[in-house]
Image (cartoon, rainbow, N blue to C red; front, side, top):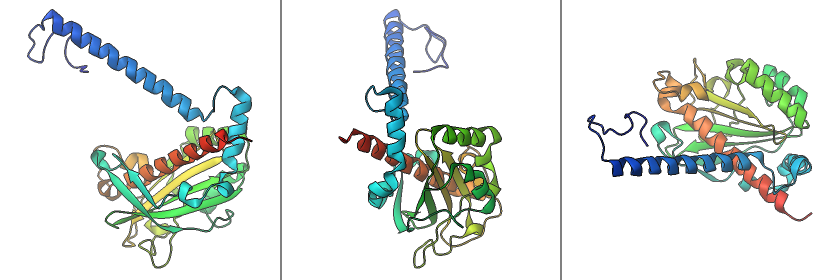
Length: 270
C-alpha cells in the first residue's frame, strides 16, 4: 500500500483505470483490516490474560509469573540457542548461543550501586542471568530476569518512573554483565559495557535487562542505550557494530519466552 501517490494516479502522474483504482482501494482496505486485527491480537497477547478471567485472572497470572524462576527449567527461560530473525542491523538475522548461566541468586552486588537503589522499591526475590555470544563470537551479551517481590501497583510505579525520568537511558544505570571464565565472555566486565536495555514489566513482577559488548575485552568510552545505538545514521562504535541490536534483540526474545511460559503455566489445571 503506497501513501506517496495521489489517489487515482500512477507513479508517472497518469490517471489509473477505474477498475485498477477500485482494486487498489479494496486491497488497501483489506490490508488495513488485517493490520487492525493484528494489533488487536497483539494487545490481547501482551496482556497475558487467559480466557475471560478479568481482574481475578490478571492477578493469578501475575502471581504465576512471579514463581517461574523455580518452576521452569533454565533451558526454557534461557534457551541454549536463540534465533533472532530480523533482529540485526538492517533487518539481518541473528543467532545467539548461550555460553554461560549464572547460578540463581539474590541481588547483592549484582548491580551497580545506583541501579540497586533505583530497583530497591520492588525488592529482589531472585536474579537469573545468562550470557550469549553471536555466531561469529565477536560480541557477548548478558541477559537477565530480575524476579521482584512487588505487587502490580509497585511494578507500575517503577515502570512509570523509568519512563518519566528516562532512567533506561542513563549510563550510570547500566546492568552489570556476567563474565564466565573459560568463555568468550571471560573479559566482559563493567568497563566493556557498550549497549544496554532495561524493561520493567507491569504484567509480571519481573525486570528484563540486557547489556552487550565486544568479546575481545576492549573498554568502551561511549556506551549507548540500545534504542539510540539502533537508530538509523548512528555513528558511535556500539551503533556501527550493531551492539544495540544485540542487547535489544536478545532481551526481546527472552521476554517473549517468559510470556509464553507464563501463558503455558496459567493454562495448567490447578
